[in-house]
Image 1 (cartoon, rainbow over the protein chains, first blue to last red):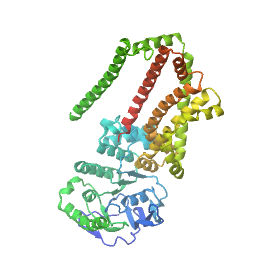
Image 2: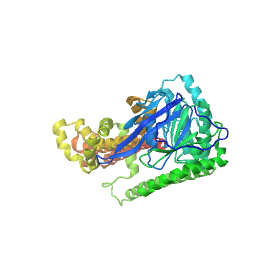
Image 3: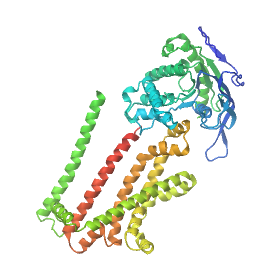
Image 4: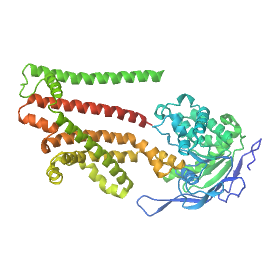
Amino acid sequence: MKTRNSHPTLQVVESPGQPAPKSPEAHVELAGVTRYFAKNDSKELLHALGPIDLTLTRGEFFSVVGPSGCGKSTLLDAIAGLSKPSSGTVTFEGQPVNGVPDGVGVVFQEDASFPWLNLRDNISFGLRMAGVDGAEIWRRVDYAMGFMGLNDFANAHPSQLSGGMRQRVCIARTLVLQPRLILLDEPFGALDQQTRLLMGDELLRLWRETSATVLLITHALDEAAMLSDRVGVMSARPGLFIDIVETGWERSRDSRVVSTPRFGEINARLWEKLRVESLKVMGAH
Amino acid sequence: MRVGILIRTWEFEVKAESLIRIAVVAGFIVLIELLCRSGIIPSSVLIPPSAMFTHGIDLLRSGKFDHDIVTSLVNIVAASIVSVLLGFVLGLGIHALPSVRRSIEPLLSSYYAIPTFIFYPVFIVILGIGSLPIIAIAVMLSVVTMITATLNGLDRIPRALHKSAQVMRLSRWRSAIYIKLPATLPYLFTGVKLSVAYAFIGVAASEFILSGSGIGYAIGYAYNNFQNDDMYSLMLFVLVLVTLVNSVLNRIDQRFQARRRR
């Protein structure tokens, strides 16, 4: 189990390429996960990701930052079981991942709300498909709508809402399924800075209440620094973890940590590594 | 508050646009009426719109063309149903086979360059005289727009919706029924709307050359026998019918389009 210091210090894992230690608390484990894609109109393969070795402990909030095109979303897809790695294995709760396992919820960057359904039906959709009992569906939906501040819009359709509200709907739709692992692929990418900070607070609250393990893919260093227990920095393609930073925040943290000196330290540490990788990507173009 | 003002401004603009449109059509009708009544346009060429209307009411009351109207409507409905269902199924099939699609797509995009009606002798030889060749030509005219709409709709399902179905661990069948079909519906409906319009054109035009009954045939017959009042009243009837059907379909389409906005 991860220890959280009351007086946190910055800890950096300098050899992230080494296999992560097996832990009884391991919730998600990646061993040698590598992904190649076929290049368009060519037999040549593009090495997009890995090999990645990573262990997420149960209840941990782990963020991944990295330059554009480094394979962050590919990594998330592999963990979610949305795509199969070219080599290596992903295990979730001790079971190898082949297809999306039960207990995994994903929130995407793109708007994934169903435009033909109102908010209540959007949020209850997954439960109805899973055959959950009617009374239980509405209990969970009412809770999720209250939690995400959507009660006033129960009968509205997504087209009547802002981007931030629609993303809340997608988070609520994931929340009602009570996933034990929540994967978020740049969920706040399209939102303005203030909304992102507030949505971050809501996400932390959700994480605390559900005790789920969270993996967040993000472009925003401040978002990663504020929300996470650990932040993994990925290299330019092929994506590898070149640095894993332990933030040491208390579990009860919120967006106010951005005004602490430590937040600046973490941000600086992340940027120091990421700057070099981002320059590599820019140089490649 | 600002949103409210914007909505009110938009509603005012829409109302103003509608009024201008109605005024243009009404002005045109009044102009034709005056030109006919003053004798500038002789009655052997065109009868006044008011006469078309009153004569049309008389024709409907007398039931003189009931058989033709029913025949045409049955043909239009049959052609619409066949082209919508066939177009949808073919669209699904073509979408599922990318290599077939790549080879067929240039043919689909240039399809409407073909004057479908030139094939009418072939249809008579194969299907004989009657409703079948008329429906066949109308289907031929309208089916491709439904295929294109189906392909367009399936292409435009957002990737996030496909992934959401996977994350919810839906079977292919449930994913198709509960996510892909509703996501595609606005595009499919655009296809339905166009298919119905093409079915109208196909049936009416085919009846001129292929049929012994139907509104198209009746208009042709009236023309050949100098029955201008019957001819123009039937034309007006077709115009009113098409406008009504199109208005209903447009209203439904607008609802779908409003939902489609993301």
